[in-house]
Picture 1 (cartoon, rainbow, N blue to C red):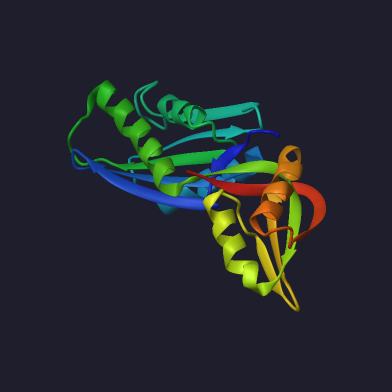
Picture 2 (cartoon, rainbow, N blue to C red):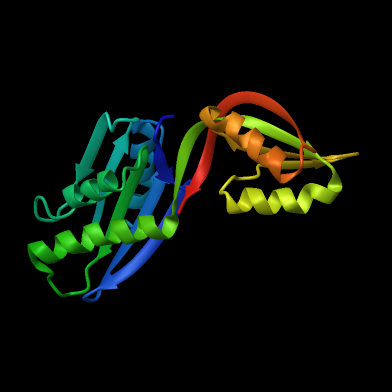
Length: 211
């Protein structure tokens, strides 16, 4: 299983005000340096009147590509702190752009570092993260009378229901790690007194919310 975290939405915006300066964070998922640059250019054009549009991004499962820019802020006070927050949160394939509208009060080097890093950290927290996991698509077929019981059990055991189909029976599909499929089947059968059948589907990537 490969640990891969990224932001939950494809794009996300978060804003805060510090000492009368407005800091606007824009996050986006990216799949190449071209898409990162395109997003940075889009935000820069949208906020062309801003004093600064600082960016940082990471690409690849192992952060093979890392880029940042202070965009006119004192060296080391903006882009690097943002990049460090991305790496600390272990997110991948994400670009962060923080737009600053200067409010007239200078923050100093330490204040700028806290402002840019804090804006990215709080924005990521607000956006939420997902883990992309390689799992098997398991479909459980049960009687209607057991549907609520199974749904309650799956929810309480942090299994994400990705599909439910109804015909003469109920077919509930969840992603399950290959290593725990036998244990999963045993637990569901024990729960429903053996009144469940399983179809083990293909292995694929699923995105699971991180609490």
